[in-house]
Length: 154
Image (cartoon, rainbow, N blue to C red; front, top):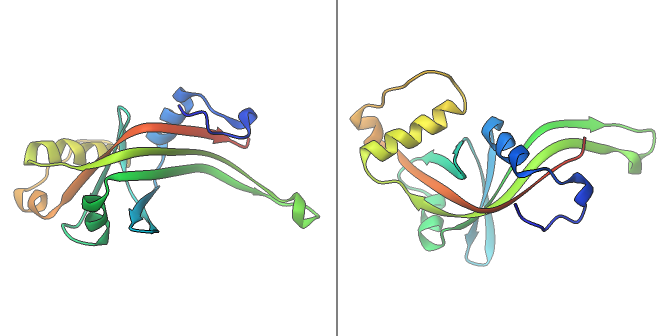
C-alpha cells in the first residue's frame, strides 16, 4: 500500500484493497500519450497483485503501451449519492483503489488462456475454452501492480 492519502481516516487496509479489486467490474486505466493523458475504461481480471486486460490487436491503447508501459489505474465500487438541502453538503459514498504499475503484453496461447481465465473469473463462474482463432485475434496484457492506495467514504 502507498502512503499518499491526505485523509488517513478514509484509508483501507491492503486486504480491503485486494478484496475491492477482486470484486470490481470496471477499471479505468490511464496511459501516457506524450504530454497528454489517455484514459480508457475496461473490463479486467485481478489475481496476485496483477491486473489482466484483453483488447483488439491494434489501436491507440496498444501503441501507447508500447511507447510507455507505465500506467495508473482506478477501480471504484459501492457508489451512493448522499443528497442534502444545501449544494455544498452533498457527498458521495464509495470505496476505491488507485494504483500504479507496469504493463506488459502476454505472449503464447497457454499464457493467454490463463490470463483470459482470470478475466472471465471476475464476471462468471465456470471453466471456458478458447479456440485458436479466438486466441490469435485477442491481445492480452497485464499490469504488474507496484503500489496502490485504497479508501472508503462509508
